[in-house]
Each structure stands twice: as C-alpha cells, then as structure tokens.
Image: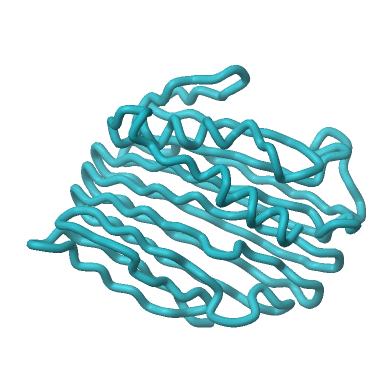
Length: 250
C-alpha cells in the first residue's frame, strides 16, 4: 500500500506544498502565501478488489487548502478493499474538500474510514457522496465511518453500513445515493432539516436514487462562503462541474 500525502504550510511569497503520489495523484493548481488549490485524480485503476488506499492531509496553521476531485471513484467487485483518509487541520486553518461521487458497484466490498482532527480556530467543509451501484445496478457492500474531533474531544462520530444486494430497513430504504455536507469549527447558516451540532458545526444530508439535482449544491456553496467569511456574490458555483461528472459516469 502506498500513501498519498498533501501538506501545506505558509510561506513567502508562496505557500510550501508537498505532494506525494500513491493510489491517488495530487497536482498543484494554484497557491499564494497561505492558500493552495490541489486537484486529486486516480494514479491508475482505483478502486479494484483488494486495493488499500491511504490518504494523509495536513493543513498548516493559518493556511487554506482547497481539494478538487477529478473523476470521482468507482469501487469494483472482488476481494475486500479499503479507503482510509486522515486529515489534520492546524490552528486557524481551513480545509475545503468537495469530493465527487464514490460509487460502489455490484460485488464490491469496501471499508471507508475518515478522521478529521482540528486545532484551535480550525474549520472545514467536506462533501461526501456515496452511491450504491452504477446505472442499472443495486450496488455492493460498504462500511463508511467518519470521526471528527478537536482538542476538546469528539464533534461527530458516525458509521454507515449498507449493502445493495441486501438492503436493511431504516438505513437507505429504496435510495442508492447518500449525499452529505459536513461543516465544523464554525456556525454555518442553517437550512431546513440540517443537523446542528452541540459545538460549532452542522451536517446536511440527502437521500435519493440519483445524483443530479441534489439540494445540497447550494448548501455546500453557502457553507464554504461562511467558512471563509466571503460575500455570497463572490462565491463560484460548483453545480455544473458535479452535474457533468455524474451524468457521464453514473
């Protein structure tokens, strides 16, 4: 197993960005003294049965890292595979990660584990879209776990188990798409049905049988604006980029 690493630290005149290629290949798009924009794409066929992917992300104090997925991820049938992401966000730093759909095809068996650790004043907005099966499929088995914490302890701990071949009542029902946006470290503006955490943060979730037209697109855009303290009129939309991807692959 090789590890993909993305590390950003402040610097003059430009931030220091260290990128290591593993199963994923990160590429620098732009940077200034405290901000970096990095694109992530598969370095080969991922995720095949038996693959084990690990991603390490470290955002230095006072920095902002924006990660842009290119192409999303498809987990194929075969032996059990895993997808592990460990994220550390330094003091007064911000992570923005709009992950494209993670598709679990028929016969796949995947475990996904993500951890996010925040230092004082850190913020993050992460979008995650899980899809059971491609068009015409029911999808395989997936266990997806997320743990978010800061120096005071856990903020969010959740675990989802789903199997398209043996759906469980009360989990996804007839839906095959689980779309979620998680904001932590600040109080974002809330929309109907959003879950507000006891400490600063909130979760928006949407279940559906398709990926296009998700009502979470404007939620993502609003929460990114809130995280960075920008005027909403200056915030670019990502709706068209996600729509093009999902229509082409799902």
